[in-house]
Image 1: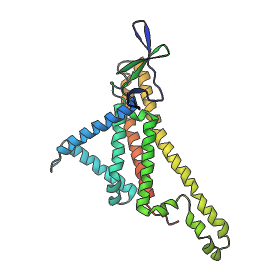
Image 2 (image 1 turned 60 degrees about the vertical axis):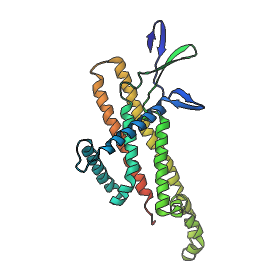
Image 3 (image 1 turned 90 degrees about the horizontal axis):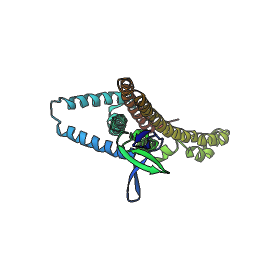
Image 4 (image 1 turned 180 degrees about the vertical axis):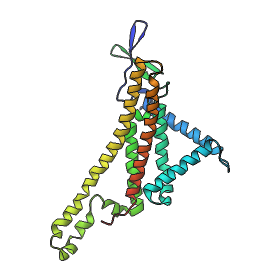
Length: 274
């Protein structure tokens, strides 16, 4: 809370993102605006980097070629083959850089300090223009849904719709009951169990989405609250270790999300024989 003249201005960290303006009937929140800003900055940065590509790498190009080679080697250890790594990596690295830049943008001094003052029920409330995109559960849930959905879309294209569907509900086991019954009378009991045991996988997919979104949101949001609390108590020097910690946490969380996405893509692109 701060004072403006004799009026108190309330500045609270909320779980939800605050609306800052409207485009027609579409509400733009401060986290959504930060997400747009991150996307634009990334686009400009990589466009500039692409223009500077030369046959003999140097500077930023050399750094990013090292990052790309390291990412390919790491992806090979998960996918088991370079062809799949090259196929999956564009999506995985897109997640990585968007989440990383969003995490780091959220701890810049300008985030949470520039904004507008709104009146609500007789109180003056400060609403910041920028809020870390990944400190909003809506953003992390959207990223998680995109990650899990992409793994299923890839699974359909890799193994076929029918085989991918049977990972969750084994219709083949139901269809094959008459044939299997001739070999084993217990098939009439066993095959229905096989058919519906895959429903556990459906719960697993929901758990994947919840885990991806809540882990990222919880770590980033908690870090921003911690930094805000420390800054309100100690203005100088003391926040620096926590700031460095949040830079590291931002990198780790972007890496974990990306690696898990790569694991999901790899798993769903394989044909299960049993």
